[in-house]
Image 1 (spheres, rainbow, N blue to C red):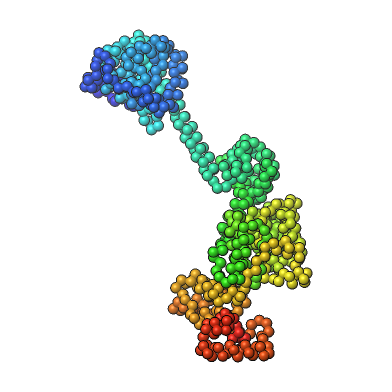
Image 2: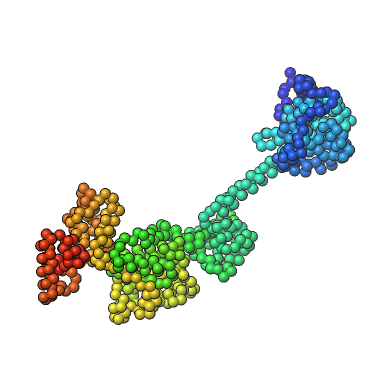
Length: 631
């Protein structure tokens, strides 16, 4: 008993005879005509053939490249070379016009299917069925139309041993030679290897394409350099930041201002992190921070470097998110309905529509920064940075570096690479100069220069840096008195005082605003909490020297002390005051006022609301007068 033929190997003569005999038997069972080709042999339409050719384009390209090698050994007048696909359809036929015509008469032409069910035993159909090289001669073919010819066919396998096609060489029976089958089989193996290389290159291309996609998807700029400091690759974000897409293959020197030392990067990568760079292209300022890292081969050979960089503007926005400095308040979050307060809001809303400097005046705790945030958030700069700085809380010797920044090496302890100041950080957005009235006099001169020119110079730096920050200043200081006492520069006041907004103290906003704010602070923390009437009366009577900030703190403290969801008088901890700030009324007028108040109180049974109504004053005013008079 003979052994089975292994897939893809050339059968012995005995095995071939057995396989041919079995194929003839199958052909008869299929009902294949042994005299003529079946008139209804399966054939593709032109559009179907075109689609199948397109599907096998890569295989066809490789096969046609090998055909020329065939005809260095075989004559195109004597032999045809053909390719059938994995389903037995003939896709390609090469040879002289005369010999091609012979084969096309026998339906061996592109579009026809050549399986055992279609044509019986042929080298093409048997190779398709058994998937090993086979050679037939003359009467080995089942149909008489194949007699007189010799055919050699070898399978072409693709990935994972899947049949991709069949390579066929055929000619006159007189030209039969065993070496022909060997040649066809060797060519099939060569085609397979070529296909593997194409697949590998395609996979590599896909990987490179995927890597390019990953780089382009990165949220930061990436630039790679070879060992000669030639730019090898920039990603999409990098091209956007650098404002050019013509850098690949160019020397780094094209980016004047970005200087790298590969030896230093390799020896001390940590020193190349978080560096600042300014470039200019087409009269556009390009400001970014970058970190450089060496690229090393497996044997530690230095291949180049990779830069990761980000726009200065985006770093500011990231800093806002991390530090929580992003402005939150808008006008609809400012609570109050008193005429004085609504007048301040109306003016602030008008200010939001312009880029003019704003001066916010008001006692401590009135909400000046909240107004500044609301102005910023309602304006065209809302998507840009909002940078607050308390000019009164920073020592004078440090305030300059905070406002204007410093260059590398400007002083002992200066951060490597320097640091931008608040005016740089706020460029395009808004800077809030809180408590400007407490700014040292010498700093006022430097600030005035920046406001006049729109330029800052970092401490120790030589370059002037443009800044486009909208300025909002605030203070509790009486600036008129400060100017008279030579504590505040008059020219700086004029520069800041384009739009002046006075925020009224809480005691002048009336009981409605006081209670509205108190209820807001209470329910924000504990929605079900209510404030008892006695507590409300006390809140109205108190003069709130700390204004809204003091009121909020008072309510928060009360919420920790109260039980049962009600804030009572004893939870407030407000100390009664016998006098308001300033001298009480004196003389007969005071006595008359005191007597009148006492009489109405007695008449109404100490009903404060009714008493105030009768006297034509607010309850808050009545409470103050009761205190002032000692009633």
